[in-house]
Image (tube, rainbow, N blue to C red):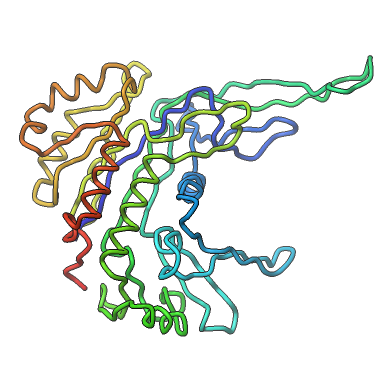
Length: 344
């Protein structure tokens, strides 16, 4: 059993990828304060939406159901993780009053943190006008928005044993796949199993491999974000660190810091955590690093951690190549042990 844990970093240049609540006619980016410092951020919800929207066009996604009106509205997906990859990976909550056959919940398999600017960055404001087609002498319509440049980092955890495994008993919303949906899943080939103290249904290993591999490939090519007409930019990970860890602890949350007001990757932290958690690591640490990101720091990391690279305990490559290679290993069945849960 293994969790893939680590960190993803987005490189935003003059962008406004996730907007918050506007003020008057100014669109503001999401930001938080730590003391006097301002840190722009992208919410986990926004990044997960980008990831969902970046799935291949031929991958079916769970339809959304909307009901109610006014302040008593609900919106939820089909709640069918056996049929839809996004319900399986991202989770859902379906609460239909008085209908136990549809009420269900699935906690996320892919946990994502908020993508916060590593170094403080105060957004700038850009003002514009709209006057096209106005008569001579008419005042233009004024508007403004915020944008910024920053390296945004967020933690990530993928619970591999839960991919394609759905609880069928429990109380209330603890059931991920209630009857009669569970009956249909069995008829389609899902097998009965015990999983973390509950009865469950499990898809075949080929489909479970496919879903994990597809998620990794989608992560390597994620796209999305607000203000693309004015502030289009690459949203694929500039840096991604993933490691298979047996117990689900993420020891790599502090590999990035700030030095001289600049984002700094700290190889000493990576080395120390790799050594401290060596007995829990179930494979090498994988570090995807886009060329040119953070200047020459990648060269410094390769030099300082050369012994770990030579020993096969650390692999460094382009994020896309690294994620695609891991996806291929999973599809070939080379990482099937990661899907098994000894508590099951």
